[in-house]
Image 1 (cartoon, helix red, strand yellow):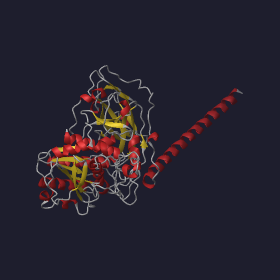
Image 2 (cartoon, rainbow, N blue to C red; image 1 turned 135 degrees about the horizontal axis):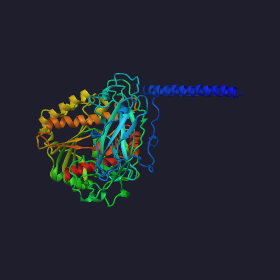
Image 3 (tube, rainbow, N blue to C red; image 1 turned 180 degrees about the horizontal axis):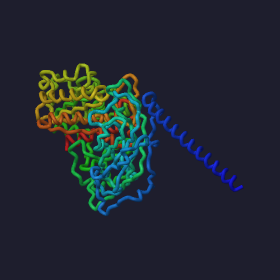
Image 4 (cartoon, rainbow, N blue to C red; image 1 turned 60 degrees about the horizontal axis):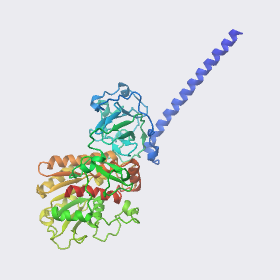
Length: 546
């Protein structure tokens, strides 16, 4: 009997092993099929994008890792000082994840090394999708988000120093040293936008949809106020006034401020506060007085974003300020067909006189565009669709043989580009046109003219779905085109001109993700709301007037 029972028991165990093995095999097959279907959809489908609530996150009451190497000095460790785990390099087919190394607690103003590991996974995408030289294969959006303050700091990832990062379908490891200046506990949050060069489709006829791929996260970072934290909000009013329009900053809820402010808030009642300087609130009439005294003639080259900025300036802030209009389609996004009473906002060249005493603006009608009337300032807007072939007439025609004689010698020339260029041109074409633009600036402006580069608008959280235009918008394309513009103009003009960067992209990038996503879905033209136009203009006002 014992022998029979023993035999039965062995048969049961054998059967159980077979069943378990079968279950494991089926699970592996299903997982493989799911992955193949997922990446096949990248080329064939356009599903609804997930909302912010779909993104992975750590509960705010989560505890820090038990092995957190807390130092009493809260020292910073740079990525260059922290080795990459060899196990990361051999990962294939597993989910991508965010890796943060100790210390998990730092002092305000310190930095933390954030890495993202993207294990190898073949997507079978066309070889015509490829990144720009030196750019990452994968486009990854990651923010460090303060659990209490809601402050969002972008993680600007770069390929780590590994040769395989530049090979398609390999395991890619990206890293960034992220400076955190505000006391809080921060959660890394984000997703992969595109793998294997799909973010750059300028050589391919198809625009692949963005299907966010969640990043696993398992670490929090705590930032503590030191005895002397120069970045504390309590010290903000002691900072010097801002003079450069590209200072690092963050968005703070008005109800969390330890002081009163008249700075214009966004539609989430947050104000933009730089870390190294304080923004002075200017009314548009005060700005007009400043222009009359310091910058009576300005040349301004730009697209529809410039049109929206000038609508605010020339109406002394009245455009889209009424509570019953602020959420209208014109104020949120589409204002091109709007009847605008001050001047024809769609003309190719628009000279506008601004009278600060009367608080009115009007088209210049005296026939001598380059000469500014007494007690006024004049802004001449040149309406460009970037440096693209879509300009009619071509943008170089602006600089005729007697350009300076006709248009005068301005104290400031503002160039607002990128938005059309990213959408409709290739990298090589754009670089060629920027170099040509630099030559025109050298030949037409004296070194007394200050050159201000307005960055393109920030783009994220979606992909272009307008069928007629086939625009090549992606977050990384915008980012790299911005940098090409800045680098080329600084290299070619920096020894002759004062050059400043009006960084409107940064202030949009540092908004909470929900605000960025809302704007992206509400405005296919990639305009910002009228409230944000006021804040962008405040940066310019401080730059020109302080």
